[in-house]
Length: 451
Image (cartoon, rainbow, N blue to C red; front, side):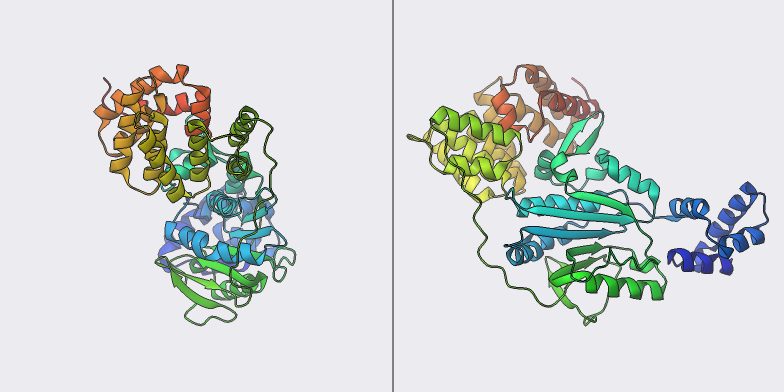
């Protein structure tokens, strides 16, 4: 048994505790029998020379693959509010952001990095490049597919679900805008791999809950490679079980957002963000508005907002201000979006769409009770408005009130075939009519009580 653990440590860099001995012994017996060997001969063969097929199987069998989107959200908040603003300021002339997810498993972490970065680098001329690496070929195949169950999204904020995923066939697909930012490749942490670990290459590296499973020598080598591969001012995020102490070589320890993480000294302090390239306004109000709606459908939020706020010809209409509010919310400028929605309501308290916008903003800032009140107003003011009914049903389900959820979801399902296309573009979170219908049915099927 000790010899088998030595082989795994040498070939994979993995360390196993004495408590794992029984499970490893059973695995040796199973694999030896499959190959018609004794247990001792199997271990000798594994140690003697490369055995790629068997090593791949062991990686798949022994890997710990549990992960999900936005796991340990406090670290992603530190990334969004501390690390990325600095890196964006430092990369302002290059407009390129590189990140690495080590032991990325089935891809949720790598895609989350891209989502957060795309939110921060809203300009279309920014390049976000995320590389996810893992030794397990099975989970990498799943990562490439970018298709996940609702369980993988259990900690994903609603706004992120609406913006970054498409729903269908009982699951969620990562949107192409994010998928284009992420690559995956197989990598064994015992491999030096000069191309992967070029000096000063990455702005951010995530390597969470891996070091504890590695042998001391391999863990030490990996930390040294990651440190050198960070640009000056780059950030390293480790798991809560991993610690490099208070003064690791080449890094400084930071503590914000209830999270510890590391920074390679150097770089610049964040400065003013470069303004997005100006977009020439359209010739007429109608042309400009329709172009902005098209950009919204294409998820080009910054360009659409630039077009709307550049000053449409004539006095802005109610619907122009509503679209501006939706785009502000999509850009993460929730305070401005809420203020605009409230101004619309002050001017016309019967404007159902403004109540819907305010509800979505309030929900994103975790004021769920007031958000529910705004959705109810929107549904009351316009009885044919499907989308507030859908949100009310989803929130009722989350609170465990299946009876109320079923009522609102059934009403939404009746109304969705007739919902206005423009409202779907504004409030559907990037989902089309069919996807929203599938989502509604899925939520309704989950209710234990049906009216």
